[in-house]
Length: 87
Image (tube, rainbow, N blue to C red; front, side, top):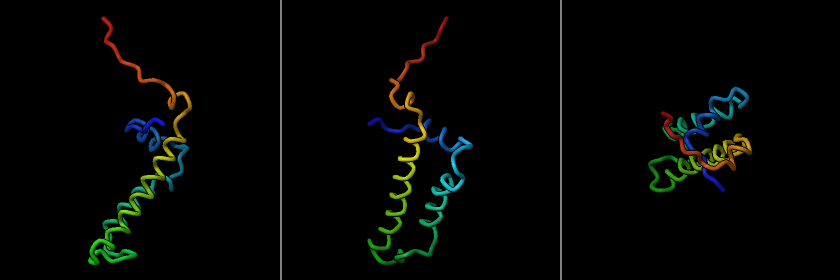
């Protein structure tokens, strides 16, 4: 299965048909990680950081699935094309 590139992510976030809530999930995950209010307080070693890592992992997995679904089948299976300079 092919990976996703930065171009795929940019196309996903620029697409007006993508729900604003889907786009907002990443920002909410960052705010949760930076927030002093957590499910498990950060001052508890290791466990305090695991909930932050879990949120980031869940949102990253969500975006990978969404961006893969967003790509058209032609983009998903098309081989990379080398750009050449004419002239």
